[in-house]
Length: 395
Image (cartoon, rainbow, N blue to C red):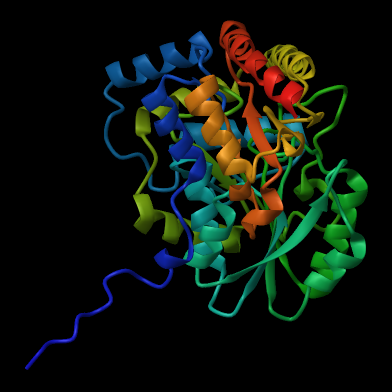
């Protein structure tokens, strides 16, 4: 009797691909390209954090921390959230420390979503959100952000809400466009979340990287929103330690209880010595964040000057450290073909933006540049990108 083979890959895993962002880094290494794809700095983190991490290891803080986070770190987070956002967070009942904000979003969805639930996702979106929803057995429902300001249409957003809507995801400052959601936009989202009894998951990992006087507004600070908002953040971007994988979640005590259970069985806990070093990060002075914004504004201006010189149209970012660029005039069939050409022939890696959309054709005319790099790295990329001028002349 012939045995029928069983399906070895889950239906969930078959619904999405591997990360295009991380894949572009691997290809960049293969071809020796300047990596303006994946969002990590190529410059050092603050020396205070290095010293704190070394001291923690030498003090033998090398075993499990409390599952939901080192006590000193949680209290430091609460203090920092108070001075920056003016939110009163109970470090014992409202904070969960995770292995980066990536695990944080997955844990939040797994703790709150059920089969049949819908999650509203603005597109373009950070590529993890859709797969996270699928892994939580929910259905992502996409609402477009429209260029050039990357705003949503209020009628489209209203139409997306229904009885199955369990949550909406907001990423502000926004990856990949650099948009920062306005108070008016957030207020409408808040009104709809109250009307439909919906949770709001906010990814605020770029909260301190802002340009031209733009203000970051946390959804949890809006009237009546603290109870239904789950705020996700981490050390990676603000403190230039993307490899540490230390994130955190702020939520009401009921949600925190569920999130902590899921987090425990996902990863047990984030690295203990790096959590203790996070205390030093949370206690950095206000001047650190002011200088960080100035530094990134200089880097943003440098990459925009390069794109102007090359002749690549772009959308000016208000926050985060990416530039979303329009490649339609280069004559390539799609973003993947153009990104492949950039790596192999020009020597610069970017992210093809179809990975930020629910349907790849929506992103075929865009690519994303990351500018969290040293001045020399950006200059080297600029020299190589100048070769693109010959393509424009031919076209």
